[in-house]
Image (cartoon, rainbow, N blue to C red):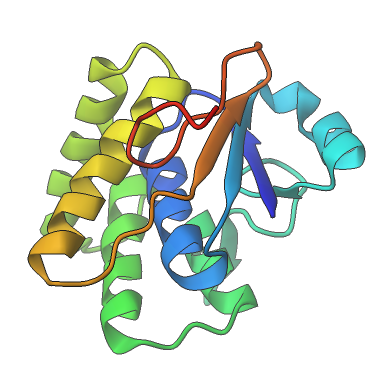
Length: 167
């Protein structure tokens, strides 16, 4: 499946591709585009939009508290793993103004901003983030997949989650 979100990813748009790849779509293709182009990209490609205005998988309120796109994906796809729900609290605390965020939220926010500052653009940011999560997964003896494809709409070649050219 194709997934589309706003360019210049921060915390939620860094965490969501990981969540999607690990729990929703084993072979995703991610598009990072200017926000005003998302409706047309959805129309042209059939991509599922997330973390953008006016789409289903975005920030919302629940019991008066802000939830983030990571939460919306968990809710829509009925993900119930207790560890994943705890991770959602950390992502929420890093991306939204909530009362009493978990202390790990500050670390996640710093890491996500660090990735963004190191990368030239989202095209470079995603492989860096996936490399770190794949490295952590390999230490847990879990199989890794490098089948994720990332594309932008500025003509660059797709790349795999390992950061190598997919073409």
